[in-house]
Image 1 (tube, rainbow, N blue to C red):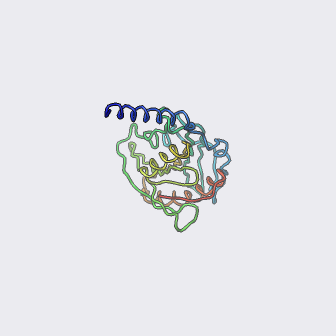
Image 2: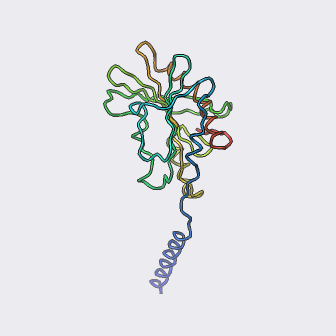
Image 3: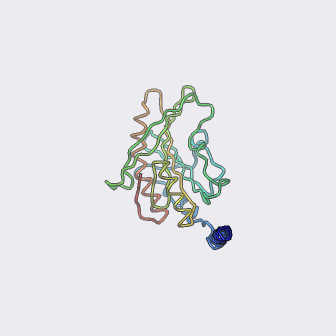
Length: 220
C-alpha cells in the first residue's frame, strides 16, 4: 500500500512537471534593436561620430543589435557601446562577461567603482563597476552597467537575480549592456577619467531610457 502511494505521488509530480513545461510560454524578445539606434548623436553637449575601437570595447558575437560611437566635447573623447542581448535564458546566446573590457595583451587590470546619479534623480545614485586596463604604456578606463527595461544595475549579482526573475516570471530574457571607455593620458589620473565619464553617463542613461520609451528609474 505504501509503495503504491509513493508511486502515485511520483507519477503525479511527473505529470505536473510535464504539464508545466508544455504550458509555460517561451521566453520572448521584449526590446527592438531599432530603438537603440534612435539614441541621439548629441547628448548634453557631447557630439558623437560613429565607431569605437574594438581594442577598447570588445565586440560580443551574441549582440543582437548595438551602437558604437565616439562622443566628444572639447578635447575629450569617450567611446560608447550600447548592445542589446536577447534570449538570455539560452547559454549559447548569453552575453559574455569576458568581453566587457579588453583582457588580452594586458599587463594589469585594476578594479574600481564609480557612484553616479542616473537620470538626474537624487534617489537613483548607484555604484557601477569600473576598471583600469594597462597595456604597455597605455591605460584605459572602462565603466559599465547592465540594464533590464527601465532599471540599471551596477551590481552584477543583483543584475543576475533580476534577469532570472525576468526569465522565470515575465518570460522575457533581453538585456542591454552599456559601456563607456576613455583613454588615460600619461599626465592624467584614472580618477580624473572617472569624473569625466560621470558627466556623460547620466545624460546617456536618460537618452537611452527615452529611446526605449520607458520611464527612467535606476537601481543598484
